[in-house]
Length: 130
View 1 (spheres, rainbow, N blue to C red):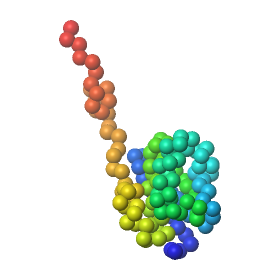
View 2: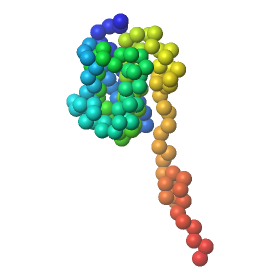
View 3: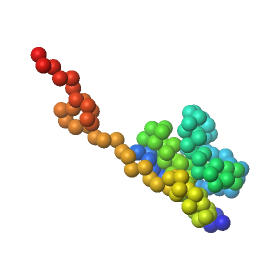
View 4: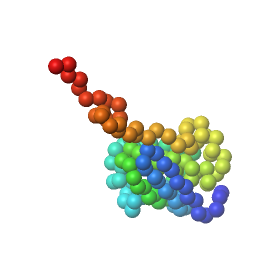
């Protein structure tokens, strides 16, 4: 096992998540709220638990999370990224498994900026011939 202070940062879209692992029984707290309350959608909860389920560390640590920026989906992705990075700090043997599943890779996709003269990033206004 690594040192007692296990923490990591993860990012996705505009969201940033910082996690701290504390020895416990698997309770996840996000911004001082219960995990299920902060992320009500089952799919987001599943996304966050993926690295823990893969490594079998579901009930070994309590996870304290701070997330900011972005929306719920981006925050869930950032949280998954940070949990995966923290798990590598716990045990370096997890790196191969987590990397193979793509949990350690930062998703580089960002929202494309809106361009002048257009309705959005690429969408144009309706063309009128007459």
